Image 1 (cartoon, rainbow, N blue to C red):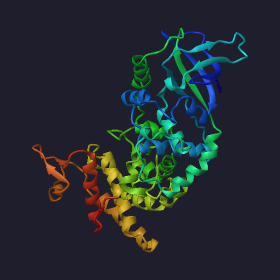
Image 2: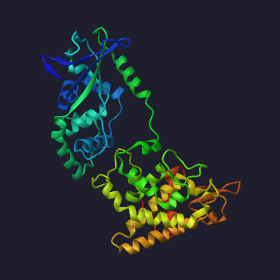
Image 3: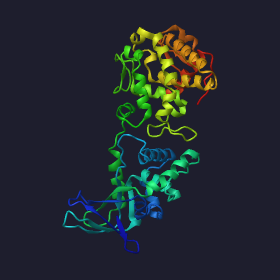
Image 4: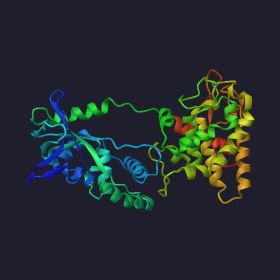
Length: 411
């Protein structure tokens, strides 16, 4: 990637863009991760760079670092059977440069830079994760993670040698005519890279993601005959709405996450499925919850049966209700931990039947007795108490648990 030439200068060898974009050009190099960290001064930042990172970059949270670590671990240890990629990093150089472009396309060009003038406009989270795993972190660049489990520390030790020898691509953005780029330029480039990005919806992620074991688990459960009989599972729809479907992949995925790990697991991002003890949610763990989920769902759908599509505005087609049923199933599993399997399964079946017998219509008079869950509006219809889906979900979970004589305890 480079040869240090003394002082604050370093030589990089790579491919230079012949064309320019306004006042900038690009220079692309490939280097080992430790070299990239050192040659861009990320392990030992100047006060000027620290200030600029605070002003023009997002904070790198422990959760973000863990998610990146887990992605790296999955691919570097070849656990995943699907392709993965670490996107190129983008560095803006804020000083004059010396660029020697090779006239022979088979040969590399040379760029001379000042490492203390390099700013990661894209990929700061990735680089921060690299520095943590290689013990090169500048403490000012990430919040301290106070809850690092033994399992995570073990994985970090395994990744150290793998990451130390891993190549990564870096795109340097430089002044087109060798002139320095300003802080104003740096901030604008950061905005240009990040402002145009739009997040994928959870439903789209679930439909496209081949790496999340819960997605595969949901697809398997979605193939149950009782679900297929009522219209099957839609992979592309975000919600059920007025469609003649039984459930969506996104909703079923959230239901199963709650069954497996309660509220804490249900709320985790798709890139970070980790238990409190540091274990990563795997296909093997999902398999242990297949039978409990099937018992509940078969009992529920078997009871609600053909009335499932009668009133498409009822509460039973709402995502929050489904999320809460997953929490209730998890509560059964937690409450009956250590009990004989036959008793646990019997309780799950009973809860499924009782939940299936509920009249979920918003005009149903029985809601008048569910004073902690519902209130009646001026139009005579009932609505959920509380502010937002988080409160509704917990109230629903308590209501479902009460059907089998359990108290819901937040997980």
